[in-house]
Every structure is written in structure tokens, then in C-alpha cells.
Length: 278
Image 1: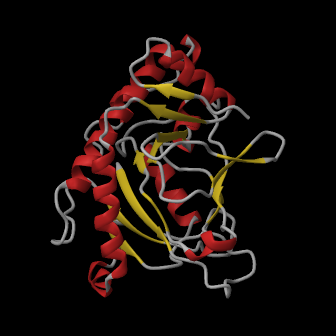
Image 2: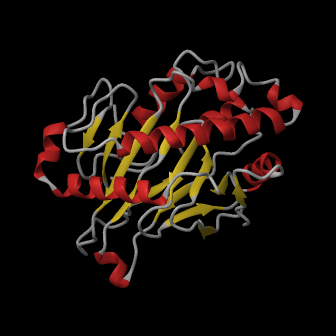
Image 3: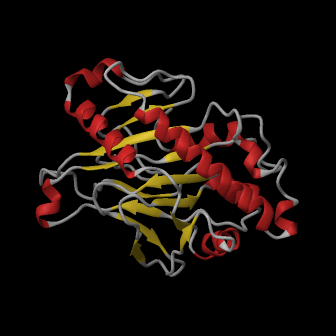
């Protein structure tokens, strides 16, 4: 499985993104202009948040899905076992806890700009028959969306007493159009190929891993595949270290028509029920 590494500034990059998404559902973006120091600062602030008992003052709102989700809140679709993680949902217009600087918002907005560029590439370089399926251009689907989600995840060190079969994130596909993931603090992300084999996702710290979500698969009539991925439990000394990641999930506005079967809102509600969040 060849996940392409694609610089944001190269002229050939739009077509390479189409090829990598078609082949694997994933790609790695380099040369994107997001400062490594900003990524490190955001990780540092969230490490302090998850280590503090005050996190429970920010329990998520069941209606808006914003806020803090305690350990073992979520399961993958069709999995009865909860993932070994806790996380925080930041949606547009929502305020962070007062201990945070502006760094998280700056990073989220920078990732959204990169995401807009990538969707523009898909708008311009996807085959004409695929582009004809989009109810509006992909880059316009998420403009002004209150569903664009920045999720900061903490996977605690393993205790050795975990439930049989429990891993940091069970095999799943993302719900949204595309996901942008600044490289996590530890390895563990794996993607499944068409033959059922698992492969580690490459990416140096500072690169941005991106992947196709279910909504892009739906909107493209299956041309782009939402590839199954997971986060496995580490072994040895790595099992005693926490892992942090912070994916940005780019979502269409709720009223956007994905296909004859779904709007973005109807699809999202169905999936949130499947993973146990509503």
C-alpha cells in the first residue's frame, strides 16, 4: 500500500491527491505552512487539560456534542467495546475553557484553510462524471458549517487490565468529507488495504495526514473510498506512554445534499447513533 506524500505547493499535487485517495483513501501533506511550534503549543495545553480534574467541569452537551467526553465514551460502528480514549469536541462558535490561549483556534483555522485547498483540488481534478455528482462544489460544502469539528484526543497509558479486545480506537471509517490530522505524539495509526492487511500510516511530526470520509464517499458515488483505519495498542515501553492526536473533521453544512439518499445532517445523525454518541 502506497500512501503518497504530497507537498501543498507543487503543481502536480492535485492529481497526486486524487490518485492517493483513489488508491488508499489516505495521503500525507507536507510543505503546508503550519508552524511546528504552534502544533507543539496546542499539544502542551491539551496535555495540561486532560491531566486536570477540572476537565469534568466541561462535560459535553448532548444536543450540541460540544465539550469534554470522558474515558470510554465512544465505540466504533458495530463494535460493542468502548475505545480507550477521552476527548474534547470544539465546534465553530464554541468557547474553550479559560485556561487556553488562542493557539488551538489558530491551528484549527489553519487546518481549515489547508482543507479548503484540498477540496478545491478534488473539485478541479476529479473526473467530470464524478464532479457532476456533487450538489455543490466540495470546497463550498463546508463553508460556514457549524459541524466542522476539531477533536482533541487523549489515549492514556495502558494499565494491563484493559477489557479483552479493547484498543485505543477500533477499526472505523470517518463520517465527514475529509479529515486532517497533524501527526500524533505516538505511533499507532493503521489503515486497512483491499486485501484486509493492516499498514502503519507514515508521517513525520509536523506533517498532516489526510483521509477520505464517508460523506465524500457518498457524494462521489463511491469513487473515493472511505478507508477503514484504527489506532492499535502499543507494546513494551510505549504502552506506558500516553498518545495525543487532534484530527480536524471537515463537515458539510447540514442542508447540503450528499446524494439522493442523504443530506449531510441526516447522514450525521444516523452515524452518531451507530457509534453511541447520541
